Length: 282
Ligand SMILES: [Zn+2]
Ligand SMILES: [Zn+2]
Ligand SMILES: [Zn+2]
Image (tube, rainbow, N blue to C red; front, side, top):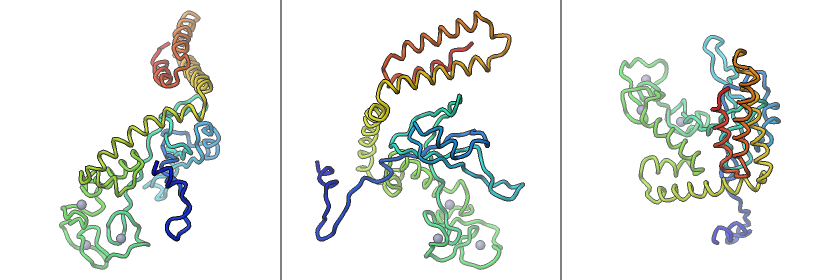
């Protein structure tokens, strides 16, 4: 009730305000892997429009041989819905969608996390010895400026970095701020633990109602049946030549048909049957 009232508020004290839910609660970001290089970002966005994808970005990586960043086979997807699907289809191929978790941002100047050097207000610290000095570092023993451990500040094994990465993951999973997520990761905030459980519950109920409101039950079922048939046809096309006999194909199709029958209109069970249809072999 308080939330509803607050959302309607236009004035707080003497200030004019406009209330809206945070973007993180209205949208989601995920990644799909092994996407052929020839698919353009526009093509992918267009192909995944029905899943609520509003933007597709091909991620890049640093190639040592070419000494530059080159396009990878990973695509980051921006969904206009809070709960992204577990998988999407581009043409005949199905891709698993994994939650997008950014890498911790580290400053090149002070080596602390959460900001970049251009916005840094701290003193310079050497990535190797943690001291403030110009030019090359002549020390043999590394000291991390963040945890004082015997490694460089940019080490993947730094416990501070591991903690930051865990917090970033938690914040994306639960759609909470990194600050709140850090408290949960550190085990500092017991209230946050309770909130975590509550949020989880909300997520589950949201997912269920969301599916129905966006696609409608019938359409979901039909589109998922099409997915099953697409997978089935792909199976037949890709099967070893000697296995493609009239008897085998007929038997296979009848197995798939059984799966389709099981679909009924139970949308929540559908994904399970899609998985199942994949395991039927020719
Ligand atoms: Zn800094
Ligand atoms: Zn140094
Ligand atoms: Zn460290």
